[in-house]
Image (tube, rainbow, N blue to C red; front, side, top):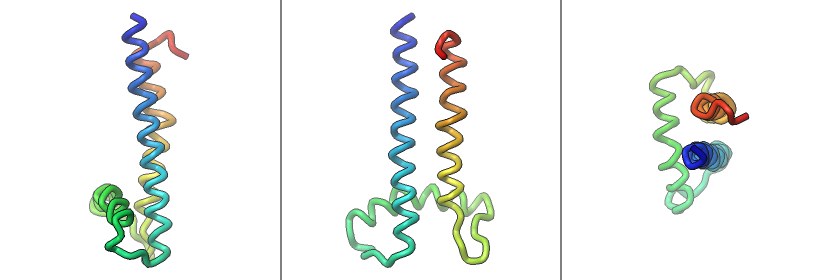
Amino acid sequence: MYAWTNLIIFIAQTLDGLLTLYLYVVIIAALMTWIEPNPYNPIVRFLYSVTEPVFDWFRNHIPVVMGGIDFSPLIVIIGIQLIQRVVIPSAVHMLIPAYA
C-alpha cells in the first residue's frame, strides 16, 4: 500500500514540476514576441518548437486573437494553472483518499 501511495505522489509531483517548467517556457516565449530575436538562435528555435504547436492548437480551436493581440499564451498559462491547482490534487485525492 505504501509503494502505491508513494508512486502516485511521485507521479503527481513530477507532473507538477514539468508543468511549472513548461509554464516558464511559455512565459519566456511570450516575452520574446515583444522583441525581434534572431530566429536562427538555437535557444529561440527550441522555445518556438516547444510552444508553437500548443499555441497553434488553441489558435485553431478557440478564437484567441483579438484586435491583433494573441491571447494563446495566456490561455495556455490558465490551462496549466487549472491542471496544477485542480486536476492533479483531485486525482491524487481520488486515488489516495487518506492523503490530505
